[in-house]
Image: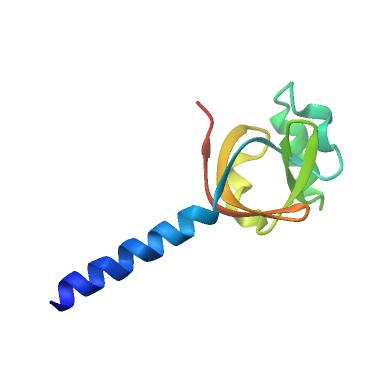
Length: 101
């Protein structure tokens, strides 16, 4: 009986988390250059700007969003990605991130 209750609680927890999560097709850029390099995949510029102190950002269409935790996107600087997370104002809280297909 305990296993059934635990499984039900876990299923409800996962459902409620995914109910609020959104998916964003984005380009990971930096706050200095913003959307300037979103189309040309200029990873070296983005990496250099972030190394120099600029915060990483997510460019979604023509909008630039802050990232809640830079460490979550550090391996994706300058790349197209799919982010699953929550949008709060102008900040995306990243749950998962993967390279776009």
